[in-house]
Amino acid sequence: MDRRDALARVALLMGGTVIGADFFLSSCSSPAKPAARADEKGAPEQSLLSMDQVHLLDEVGETILPATQTPGAKAAHVGRFMAVMVRDCYVPADQKTFLNGLAQLDKDCQKQHGQGFLACDPAQRTAFLTALDKEQKAFTAHQRADDPAHYFRMIKELTLLGYFTSEVGATKALRYLPVPGRYDGNVPYKKGDRAWATT
Image 1 (cartoon, rainbow, N blue to C red):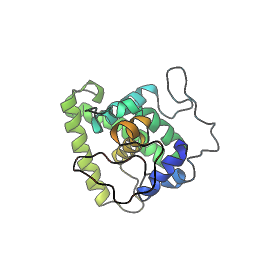
Image 2: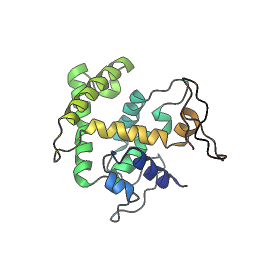
Image 3: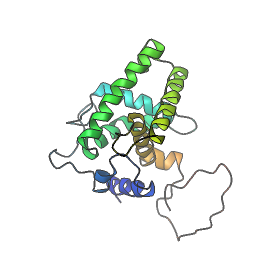
Image 4: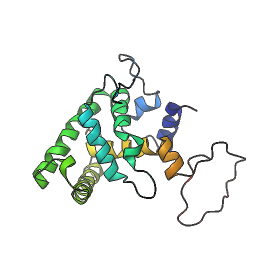
């Protein structure tokens, strides 16, 4: 199974709640644009996002899923993943929401802490994103059908999706069995066990 198939299955498992799910489930294709390739610095070519924005997304992702006993979101290159997903799987309206929101995130952090997100220490980053997450939850709870999604919800969804479908997330954060045996619907579970990446 290739990565695209895996992503489509994750979208189905999430109940199709991923922003841009219509494009996501139709193989994330953007017919007007060529297939993504990485340049010598690892940035996706023809990206909607600059390398600075990709770096910012890596740091935001790392704050959401920090490295502990397992690697964090930055090790899975979630910034590059988000750049490709936003370009290939989001409709123009959602792309605009995402890009404007990313700029707003840094502006709001500047207002709150007197410096941009990248200049903040880990405690400031965590406090800022925790408040932003409360804001997006309140927004989503009262969202009308024609309202755009909150940009931070998009970032969180793509961070989780990018991390848990990456090699790092599947093999280090989850339990991975490359060649599964028979199906067993009653596997013993101990509290604290990692979830399975394969079934």
